[in-house]
Image 1 (cartoon, helix red, strand yellow):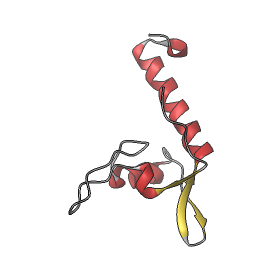
Image 2 (cartoon, rainbow, N blue to C red):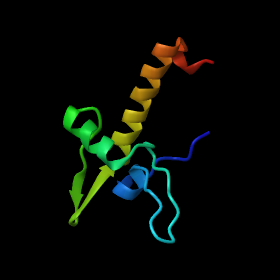
Image 3 (cartoon, one colour):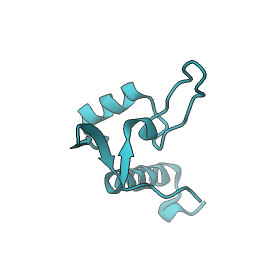
Image 4 (spheres, rainbow, N blue to C red):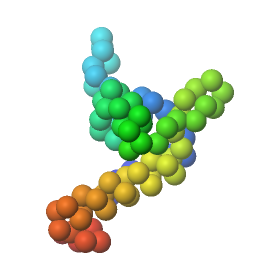
Length: 85
């Protein structure tokens, strides 16, 4: 079971963050790097952020829909219709 997706997602929660100084590396919801996110947004694969008080954030519903779409595509490729193993 995965953790629930928050309603508002900040950049640092969405993508992988490398270790920096004394801060450890973290894994994002999408488990991709920032460059891959921007390439995917330009290609129309990933949703674009919305502005909220000067911050760029992603809507949890958009990310949830993306994850469901990616899971369905993975299931179809791997021959697991409906998510059955």
